[in-house]
Image 1: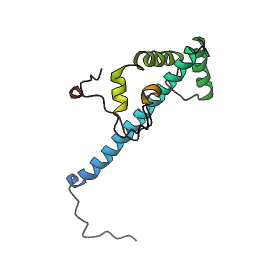
Image 2: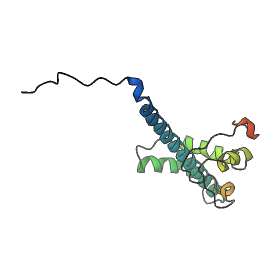
Image 3: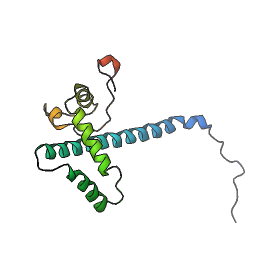
Length: 143
């Protein structure tokens, strides 16, 4: 037979848990930002590879549709790499790979390590933290 404690412990006020709740929220936000940064870097690298291969006449424009179908077959749950999205990725890369504002954003990413000036030629490098958009005070716009 189980007995109940006649003197249950006093409940701690919920506000006492705020510091732990804030730690959890901050960690979750950092995780989301790290995933977003990694995805942006992946998209940039995919864009760069597609653009380079088409530019060097290794691939024709029709290969982008073939790549979308290939990715759908080998990774059925993969989202975001349809023919249309791959074309948009390529257009994004073509529009911004030489843009100084995009280089500013990539080159000034907190936690980003760049060992040489190859960042501009090769796109984003791996980062352990997230990139903030350029602020108005830095002289670059976020658009």
